Image (cartoon, one colour):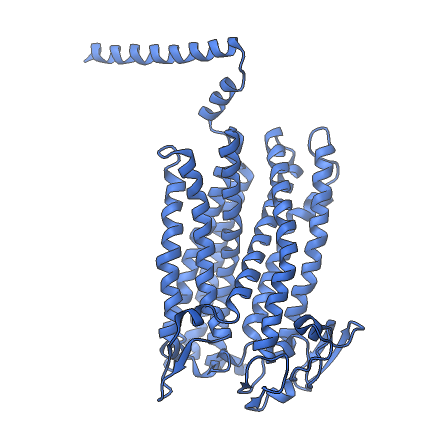
Length: 510
């Protein structure tokens, strides 16, 4: 019950809940934005009304998700002033710059061209419309870059100095701050994970259409979605290996306390690689099932099995000199360790689910092959399609586990090694006020999620629908025989004659 009166804990809990909810929609919007652009690219090449319908379908799903993501993101920015006022005063000169750049350079770009995509298809050239769909996705990816620059600076601050009176940190080198040691690895690692989630969602929609077997068109769309999601999924899952390695190596170099928590290491020495285990924070010990290769994590980070890293016992009690540790690139650590067991378990859940995603890609490939071999495009049996339909839960949980490692693993620091979390909270906010806002957020977000889910599920149930005019044009143009051309010409002439006759009758009536 003590936690219910701890303002710092409650402020962290409130921010965590809003971030988790917000980060349900951000990965979906960035991941699905790519597939909307790919669908429009396909239509630009084929001019097939079915491809146009698929493009419109993904734009609808993307837009619905994007709107909720924007709305829930505003909440977090307000909380910097309401719950984290001391943090805002201390690092506002630095943290505010990437947030402002995100709004001016990325969000406006994304929003303007989303308006073009939604309302100007028939008013601009096909090429400009295609470019607009890609700019929408590019804007979302650019927005993620600025947000991750801000977050990365909190993890590995650079390009700053603290004023002599200690009141705040000010920026001294913008590019050093923006391109701090963790920006590039974190951006590549994060965005790739968002694209993995998008690919699993697209595969799930494809499997759903194959499972329902409602119409030949939906089965055809299902096979296309399954194939496209599978291709992007394979590429992004493979790319995750080097990107994840870059991120882990950066953590080893700049955040040794987080590395030690990720592997449950209490004493100095080479870091092994645990398959699973239990970490007892109070007893300061770990029971681990490790690979039978001593120092394997040290090898992954530095290329040597003998590289020694500081353990949690060395870093927990105050300033420690880290200049003697070969694999660490920071000179000192001010002390304090994160919640070790939750960091350890979150990290290993993330690694485990990466392996599960590989299995799911294999299953999706099997489903696609069976669908292509089936006479009606819908293979027998429901188990395999059902597994793919629920596949997006795997990368989503993996993403959330990864962010728990990132954020909990840097505690007790809100700005790593510079500003303690307990020193960053607002002093005038009471525990009761935070509890009330948490309850209100939960109620409102549940309602918001249900509304979003109903809309998106309805869109998916309806599926891509070919516009009537597009279907007529396609049926005429698809047949190149003279008879078809004559019929098309006759239809055009009749339409023109009807229009003239209607206009004449209207004038006579007047």
